[in-house]
Amino acid sequence: VPDDPNALRILDLEDDPVDTELIQANLMAGGMSCEMTRVQTRAGFEAALENGDFDLVLSDYSLPSFDGLSALELAKEISPDVPFILVSGVIGEERAVEALKRGATDYVLKQSLERLVPAVRRAVREAKERTERRRAEEALRDIRDAERRRIARDLHDGVLQDLSYTAAAMGLIMLEVEGTKLEERLQRTIDAVRRAAQALRDAVNDLRLEEEWDRPFPGLVESLVQRNRVMARGLEINLEVGEEFPSSSLGETGTQLLRIIQEALTNARHHSRARNVVVTVGMEGSDLVAAVSDDGRGFRPSTALGVGLSSMRERAAAIGSKLEIESAVGQGTTVRLRIPMSQKG
Amino acid sequence: LSEDLAMRTRVMLVDDHADFRHLMTALLGREPDLEVVAQAGSLAEARSHAAAMRFDVAVLDLGLPDGNGADLIGDVREFNAGAAVLILSASLHPTNLERATEAGADDILDKLAAPGEIVSTIRRLGTGEAPTRRE
Image (cartoon, rainbow over the protein chains, first blue to last red):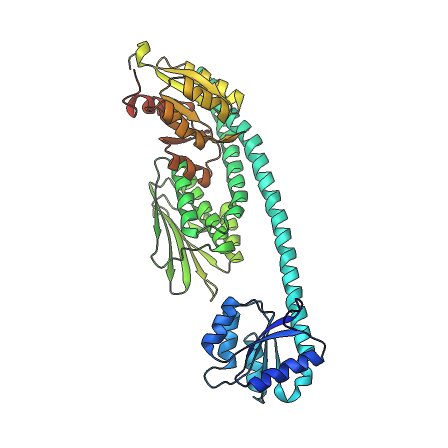
């Protein structure tokens, strides 16, 4: 049995070796080949989960030095994808329901072990389906990312280069028509081409943002601020990252947050006439807070109905947050965002 | 500024967009103190120029067909120790900019910058920041 490559690898948290044998005998009688690893302490359970590659966790409810609910919590943390079945004496409906609420896959009474085989079969099958679904989703995401990269590259290498050339070429012609009646018309045309190129560049960088999900957020926001400094000469942009701020990737939340900050910086650059902008990201308790403040001319909130603003709002909603905008004429503008970070920060 | 030949700032242009290069040549050609002495459309071409030519400012695009322009900065400095490097790029993508800054670019300019700004930046880099450039 131990050498069967298809054997289910089971971690059994159980203080009574006889019960483990009984469980194994039951599974084998049901036609399931399995390899049992029995542990009975917290340390043993934790070490086994961290080192072992298990298909399933079976756990007693009460043990001399440990308990099933704490084990469940630990298992959810270390191996969230491995199904967890409580196998215990009578503990009452309430406790069983509580365990299921906290993420146990199933609950089997030691007094009715005949339920064990179908429960294990179902748990293992469902776990396998979840894994397959996740793989399919990952494959799909890879395809989508590759598509985005291709579009970004095509736009960048082709259209953006030609637009930049066009703006520069018209700029050169401009030097020759200065002081003539063509000057103003040409300038307006140049401005439009530049706007188009900038919008295209933003779109390209936006597409490329997807590639950076897994990079640590502080580095990403630093790069983003640096890029804006380059694009906005004469505008002082400062970045403050709070000490408690996670130094890891923020995943999708990070991507959306970067886009919101970018949008706010774009607004500050184009509309605010500000001299100084401060970007802050930090933690307040378990909330992530981010703000972009400028000392520009401000606006009456009721008048600000730009596309940029609604896209910022949409992105904020997508990550479970709400955008706050403080602004008044002559008082500058602050765009603020608070994102509750659940236990999975 | 003196229009003396010896005071000219010699420029190498590296960009795979040939029209853009010609345009830059025309733009810099209007300035008596600036002179385009070499042009390249790829890393390979630029490397051979870097070894053979003397120039004061290298103007580099980042996205070249055979690699990233930032990788040229080392070659430029190896053969033209005093030369300044200006990144003139349309993309301004943070990853690219970081790479260029780390490789030692002296300045970074948006390709959409006004012609006057491009000229004044090259002039500043050519006169200000490379004291050993003239023989």
